[in-house]
Length: 298
Image (cartoon, rainbow, N blue to C red; front, side):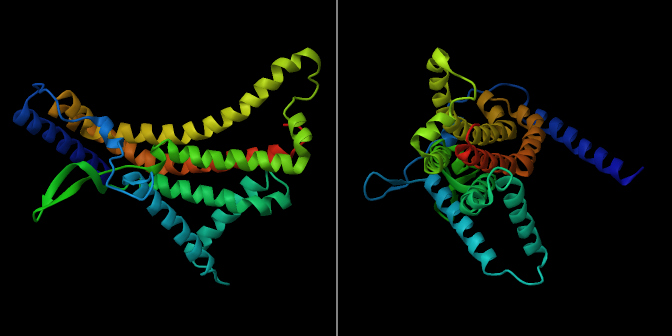
């Protein structure tokens, strides 16, 4: 028997054995759940109030960590460029050139690319760090605690700043304001307004088309926000439910062992693909919107 088959049969045997053991210990009897509220995992409880209308909570903590990682990484990379790059520098240069040549320059001219590339790369790195940090369990769940030498320590959980709609909305507003200002600067108010009208559209039909074009720009703001927010929120909820939350919610302990492999699979899928993909989509849409704002028609 090959090593791969031994590994498959071994994992399968452990899984079946665990299923049998849990069934013997807890059975398939349903118990009522009155304490576990899955929506509270995304609730932002105030840890302490800051001056003014601001509060410090886990959302702010994740945002500060993401900001520190983004600034720290960019400063570290910028100060350690070498004539003979190592593997780390080679990977950074590959990312830099790919973002600049394939994302930015394909959608803008050279002058705009030099001007807006820092914004695009910063948005990509910030969103990527925020997404990846969201899959690292941290002790931030103050609703549930455990004792360590007499201290009540918050329970570990996964949470992402981008899973709160306010963060994607602010990032989308930055892009929305930037491309509209750039469009007005490049074409003037009248020229930018005319560029919103599709070529060849004249007469009374403008009464219908022009409001729709204006609405489409605000829908860009909504789509940028919802795409990032909804994907991260849905991914975290699926991981939570499949990793045991659904079993607790339904009061079926046996169900947790059955859904756990799916929770692990979804976690790996989110970490390896979705976190980077959503950052990439946000960055490329930023480039497209900026580039289309200065063109005569789009």
